[in-house]
Image (cartoon, rainbow, N blue to C red; front, side):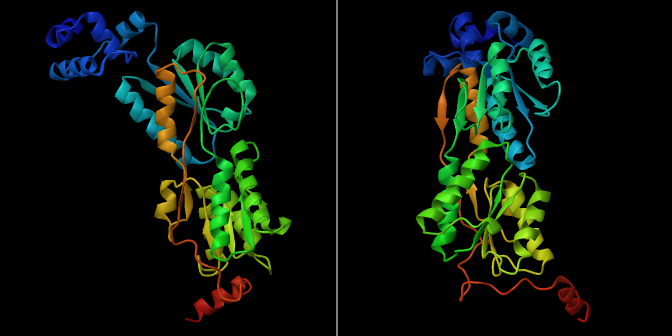
Length: 350
């Protein structure tokens, strides 16, 4: 089995240089890094993790704590973080937690004492909780907050949620919709409030007042999207378009529309947020905001490994227009919602 001495001899460098490259330390010349990496690959060198920890005072572990009802959102963050950890010789530890659990701070203490992670990635609502982020800071564990709005002194990776919410609404306005319903996100996620503010901004700029009848509360999960869709679409004067502030809820709205005998997008346009895989798998595919979730996970690892403890990185979003939206029908207001029982009877009669 190859040793670090073998790698150093093959690359023609010192053992210290090999160690710096393998530990991903900064300020190593690119050509020197390339020589060491090539030698390690040629020798199929596998560093001893225990020795690395003792020599460098690091665990080579990054922890991701989450409490989020949107599995597709979390899976994308995981994918980006795990891939980058593998590339850098780190391991990702995933810890689902209950943000309102009675022993959340005790769990944090046990995690730090047992694993001693080199850094922690937090996603909403954990990244919005000053008690949680502050506890990691008190314990001396670097944190990257993903999608946090403002907040403490930790590193932060985010996008302009308000502008993204406005972009969705402006698009729906641009294709003729004026009665635009919204399914708000979980009230504990500050980003959800920013998306709603963007919706409000766009309507205000178009001279349209907020209508409480077109606003429903969701919780970023499928079931709340279904219930919100039933509420909005079951009304006599229903919206011509609905902006659900994440993809899971948007899929729920589409399911509710079908349950009520409505066609998407001919009877109601539906837009989501995040561009998770389900937005492309459902029919019709969702118009949505592409949030760079995998990049957020990947960049979080870079920030922690490079020890940029106060970094603030704003990533861009993109509006993706698909078949779940179309211009408002002639005449503006679609016909009233069909009676579900009558619709079923027609099907039964062939």
